[in-house]
Amino acid sequence: MHAPFQTCTFCSQENIVLRNTQAFCRFEREPATRGHLLVIPFRHATDFTSLTADERAGVLIIIDVNACANWSAFEEELRAILVTMLVNA
View (cartoon, rainbow, N blue to C red):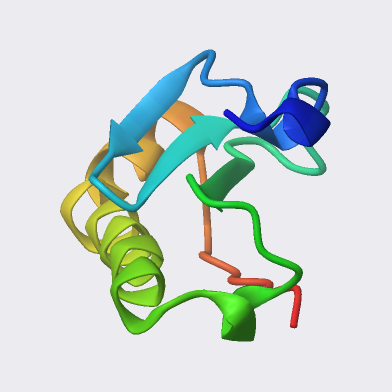
């Protein structure tokens, strides 16, 4: 991790749900809704469009896996009813 980002609140890798070489997914510390997850690229960028194609793919793969493969678990355990993707762009 680079020095300017040592105190970055998004860099915390506590409660990781899923990870790949480009990004990781964790539960939000102060969730807006039940099951609120953050998908965070490892490299700091100002917005989604600043990520490389591989980094964007890594983020989207995590979203796809969480939304599709784990959906029944989210439905049962978290009583989730939808997936919303917000992108800082």
